[in-house]
Amino acid sequence: MPDTSVDPGPELTRLIAAVTDVPLADLTPDRSFTDLAGWSSHTALRLFTAVEDTFGVRLDLKTYLTTATVGGLAELTAAARRPEARR
Image 1 (cartoon, rainbow, N blue to C red):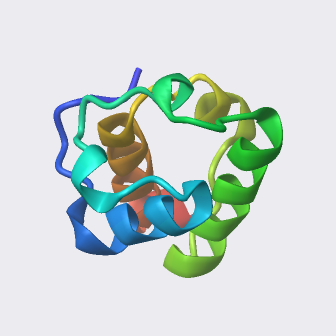
Image 2: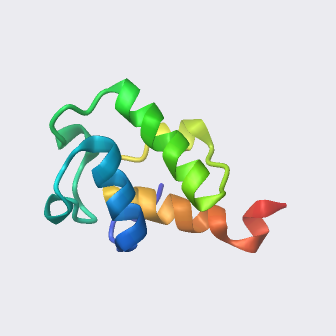
């Protein structure tokens, strides 16, 4: 399970804000995606694609869909960017 305390960093936070139309100030590491106004399965898939495209990573869809928070997505993205994940 991803660590929810990881700071998502400005680039990921801006990306989440752009996809979800949620103000940057509202996107803290412990913020749950299901608590975001307008969050839906469609938004989740748009964010999944945006993260993969922006960061040049491949995320496991099942793991992504169980990632509940902004910090969890930050950890998942960071893990996917590690050299050993690219094998």
